[in-house]
Picture (tube, rainbow, N blue to C red):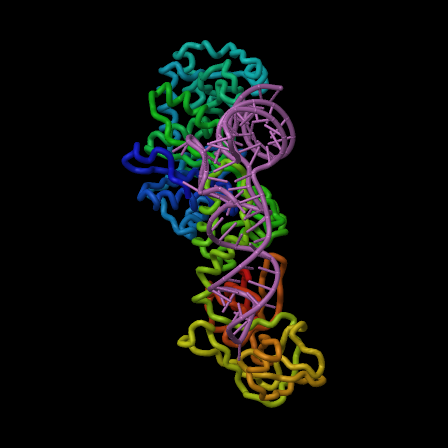
Length: 476
RNA sequence: GCUCCGUUGGUGUAGUCCGGCCAAUCAUCUUGCCCUCUCACGGCAAGGACCAGGGUUCGAAUCCCUGACGGAGCACCA
């Protein structure tokens, strides 16, 4: 990752994650802790996790999301030095608003949004702009006391009504919200700060030195700059990055879209393998580290980027290949009687580590192989770890030949499982479920263990139910 | 409409500030070969890019202008 700007000017690099707890994280959200957490490590800095939960209505917080997000950060391998919720800090925002009014930096306004918007677009002040501080104080206290309904009164920051960028003209700092906040502790507040005010105040109070945020907040620094000027504060260094899109997913990466699909049952949950979420990758056995590595490689450019899942897979494969045991899983098995040969197949647990020993798979007189692996009649195939067989009518006849037939005669090596003694398994993938049978030893793996199904790919063991074992496919 | 920002191979990225060492880095990807009782891992090789047009200059991916394309903001959302 590129160096952060102007690091020398600060004693310590202090950054913050500012998630909105309105749902579990999609993969795009993971970029924030991945990059900011990595910078924290690079500079031996400090990191705050601040839940920006100041909208009880439109972006209504989901009470479970607070912990789910902290859990996701932990899975990615980072730990915030401090965790706060903006909804616990409302009194602080009120205090700074009062100071701002004293400085002449804010006024209460009862224009409708529409009315004000028209005036603003013409660079014209509304009649409330010249209100004296005393009246503003009275009306702001009335806002705090909940004496107005939503839409009746706001507190605006007095910026520059003729600023050439209309986005910066006298923006709203506080508004009324009728809907109570879902958190018990914050449910009495009706006067809520807007993001630009809340975030601007907090960034200063927590001594944040470097802010990284999305291009959707490109104007925030300039907006907040007016408040910083009134208070004579220094604005932190700020970087903006573009949106991340991820190939390989049909589902749009947005909290609200995923929420709808989960609610309607089209997705089995936030960790459905088809969902572009942190929980989904986690259930598939993909390491948080792999996500972080792929995310940090994207850098922090302001243009929108496409993250290729193959990049995440490549990082993850690097992490797990050496330690993942090998196993056989036969999809849609075709049964073949085996005539002759050993009673037990003994493929290695890991081809690169003889010391880990071999698996022991009983043949039991018949095996299952995948339909595509059944050779034409009269042709041979090598059952991995067991030996060579010739397909004759409906049976596999053991031929006893040497391994050289694989090396020199191009006989294919295929995986197999006993027809009787095996583990029925459902492999959940992004393209849907695959059913089949795994070798008997798979029953001994615990939930969360990751194995490589030879010639198929890596998968995480999810659950051993009575009727079948469930595993989640990670990647080839 | 107003205001910002961006554009290097399929994807991401380095280089752009301080023009030449860039016929452009690294990773991923694709293909071929080698290794291999896996189509994994490993090894080798190949493929593929400076948005366009002008200008400045001995020399431009890098500087200037114009245009195209893409993105963002102008919310009592975050």
